[in-house]
Image 1: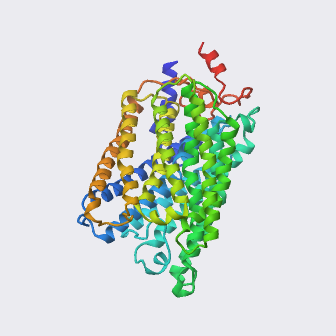
Image 2 (image 1 turned 45 degrees about the vertical axis):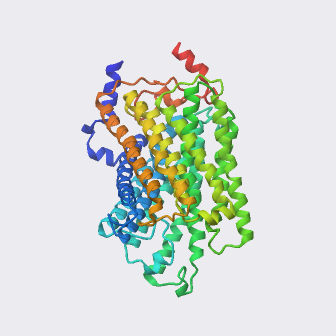
Image 3 (image 1 turned 90 degrees about the vertical axis):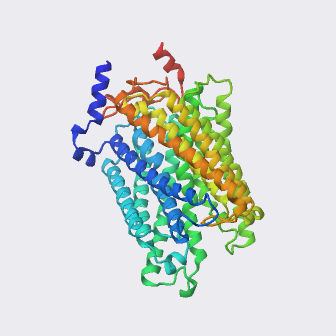
Length: 538
């Protein structure tokens, strides 16, 4: 049996299949691995920019790079990490690999479109990297007008075009997920028997399909104004810069949930598996995912509290911003209730789940400060916003991504990783993250503006703490890269269900065969039913 498992893993991952077979594959699992390799590269390049930023900020003077170069560093860091890592991270990798298997399908609905979506991400990334090496862009990842359309002499068009192309990758992935969930569920796999990871990716797909075209149109308008000097956003040409902010944030705030909603789905799987209990309030968590997707489109105006928006509109958006926190709170409370009296096992994926809950909760609570009109005026464009954003996006999305990667790595590769090193890296990551970003809340409250290469000397201690934390965080991210690579050759062989988890993905071999199932399964039990798992183990 072990020999057969080794052979299957070798057949699945072996390069003897040839590069062409990978580049033309229609197997959703291989495409997920292509995405994984791609976004890992993007992550480390974005991390290099972050490293340079933190080194620059160790001293109050702008003495490592010029202010102009610093503007390009934080812009390219934001562009790469947001559009080329965080947005596709979980849906394109873990979602692509496991969503079809979790609902009993042999593949996604449109395999060729799935491969096309990866190529579009590659093309978009290539355009962004071309802009980076040709001289960079200095507008910030938000491309605020009229600076981006009329005054910046950097590579705005090439960078925005890369994002434009990558946006279609996101749209096609979302479309594929929606059709797959509606049309390809196994017999007996009703909507309310689907794993919550599938629900989360389904809700995310709705945002991708409905929201991303708005960003595409916005970027086309930027192209038109910059190239043809049509007055859309620049007041000197008769345009309105606030219009750009409305259009950009109408997509970009829901995009926050494109990044974090799939992570919430991962956490639901981890909490249930490692507490050995069905998820508490399954229906409410599923409904909260859809609620976040809907309400997320109604809160973009809280980014415009200081941008000439009327007080009455601000009050409405403030209320809605508080309201959107309720579905997220439902998830956190239900996860906590699931843990209550559970048989909790502190495996590495569970450590990342605990880290997610702690960091995301801090990020969510500090978001309430930004939803308040009076407080938002004080902390707008300060390091408080940076800290809040990173607690949600990095503390949330990446912790969930790492948790999911450790959870499903045995299934994806057929190999286990060294558990001691994995737990150590989880602890280092949690410690390094808090040391990096918590001082930034204090910096922001004290009035330190973001996006400045130089700052008053009284802020240096907090910046040094933040930069030291970034060093610790980098170690936490590098260790898994090493032991994951090691495990591909030397890791112990993984069984079909090493965690004793429920779900259809654990009923196939590790890694799964190309066709996923020899026979399409018939689903007869509810989600997270561990009685059948225990019977199989017995």
